[in-house]
Image 1 (cartoon, rainbow, N blue to C red):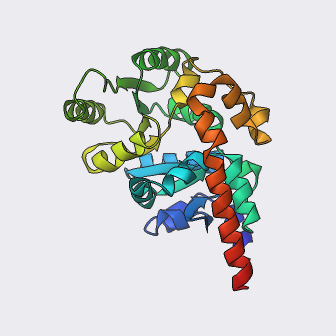
Image 2: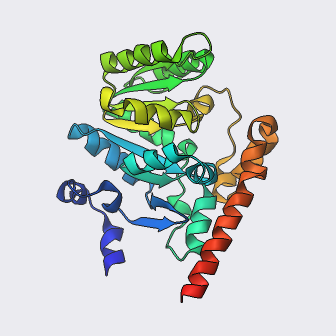
Length: 278
């Protein structure tokens, strides 16, 4: 009956359970040390809309195999997940691992930013919301502003360049925090790559004025047309990693050819524990 109850997930649930631990408001599963919520795109948009409407400040994190690897090797990544209000699934690898551990996860719960960004931006534009992007590359920031103005005319969008190559980090941090607070975005995209973006959110969460904070990695690279966009069918079948490996081998080879072996070891260890504890 519990599973059937959660399957309905009406909007009223958010209002009824707002004071609860947000990760437990939606179906939540723990395995291999991490905790994820089985969310879909409409549900994520519902969470974003509610946070804005009620003037909350929340962090929506995500997990894929790379973040799982970092989670077990970086204490600050573990602190970041503990700080996050929701953690959606950002890769079929996490869905498959969850299923192997006996959890009812499916393809509909794999939500990458390529799947979510356009519906999120369309909803934000329809509601005349404000969004700000912090990015590593000045060209991407400039291009993103042009694309947003063209494709999402109702959205008030700004981009801020994280120019760490030319500006001391302490000075840059103050400048970026000031830019965020001056604009007061309802949606803040932090695209500095893992784990830099998670560290930045941890360090500055209490200082920034934003309703929904999203560590988005290279998502804006695709919006700006700076990275080849994989066909969406490859994601549904869990082989988007292969597309990225062939497109950007120097950038992602370690993520896709080395780190998964650590995850295989984690899974084997967990399955052995489960077997012997029965």
